[in-house]
Image (tube, rainbow, N blue to C red):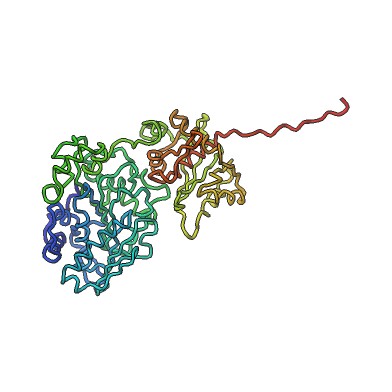
Length: 525
């Protein structure tokens, strides 16, 4: 499945042909057929449009059609070699100023970088033009004598800030479970008119919010060719406050299927048998050309859990929910989805609310959930704010946000001991907010009651990816007494949105001790 070219691709309409010649004639790298095909299609040029390469004395260069290239293919197909060739071609032949290579794990990004440096050192024509590289861990940089650079960064919310990148290579985009890293690293291209972002991965799952969104947007002009995630509302995959660093015009462009977004996907057809050799070949384009063999794929098919094999080897997306802590379908049963209620207005909380605040275990993000009741008295919980905790502003935005809405808030809670949010709770109280302590036995009882409420469809909520992903993947932590809490450290994603939900519902239903009526002593009786 791929984004079709605007016209026949030739030497004059794609720089992919030049990239292939560079790989084979200069770098002595023999590319697989799928790698050649991808370079030709992904480096398509916009008809009749040029921009100035300011790094090379303002020389006019053709404009790439795609600013964002999404590549989906099974594991071990040669993505690293492709990335190395692409980076060196861009540095040496196109003279772009800065390449940023990233991955969730810095070691992964550095392995690709190391391979590119090895090609340079083994190729006299390239080595002659190269300056001494920077080899310091975390700051590795390939430098050319003419000033071009290739740096590596870990994919996090600080990646690339202060830099302007011309080529961004993101490996394993499936691991991006929030928009923070994407917003930080890809926005380095804003001031670069001919920049490209290459995102490479195999298929993701329910937690792969960024990849799901980009895939959905790229499939939109193709008519949703495989139907996977067809029911996703793309906007629901975006954070409530928007993608970090992306303005409204960019979001609108992306959500309408901007033709500068291209997808090139090798995957087996949905529903194919795991033992189908044709399905193997469709997802593994290096099969028969390199070290990937039918024997190794057959062994994996017979020994892997089915969805491990489908995701990693067949590059297929699960069209069902992940096996999370709740009974299958229970979380979804409590969601109010507009498509299921045609002509009905969205339910609203009537009257005041209670709030719960929680902060991620890495202290990178804070979340606020509201709980209240509708006109019929049915409980409703919503995540109303979810923002990064910047190094400058810290958690101050939480205090300001809640203070501005103090007139509708009856109580504010959060874990008052042993959690990242605990230090914030006294500050909320000092700001005059009605803080309710949540600690000790109330934590476990609140979590247990929340679980029961999900199981029994005891409250209403709406599709919100940051909460849905946490609910689909949260890991329970058993206590000595047989109760449980949500495990912040062992859960595969940030569970603080789910903890905010849990605390808000607990606070709404908490037993409120009534003050005893004053006893009036009768005199003279």
